[in-house]
Length: 95
Image 1 (cartoon, one colour):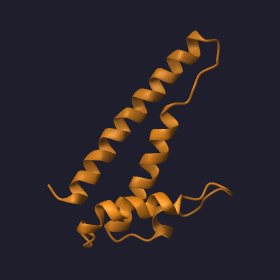
Image 2 (tube, rainbow, N blue to C red):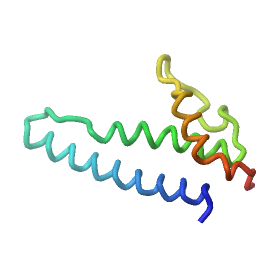
Image 3 (cartoon, one colour):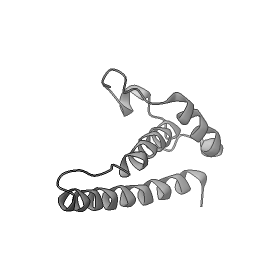
Image 4 (tube, rainbow, N blue to C red):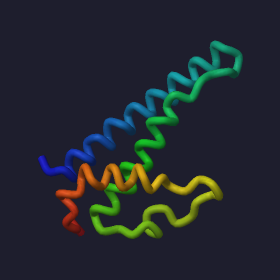
């Protein structure tokens, strides 16, 4: 499997974990009277940055991936560069 394929599989696994985390969080919130932790948000942040890398490797621009961001909600360029180094071998545009 190519590096790009591995990245796509990891994104799929993270998406499932995020969905499970949201369901668990709602259940915990119901039991604790509205208070719960947000453990799935760390997975969501990781997913966001890995998705940006996946799109960049496929030839998209940042404007095409995330057109608008709220103030202080810009993507972390350090994480993006870190993931790019891991998956850069497959940096051929696959349109």
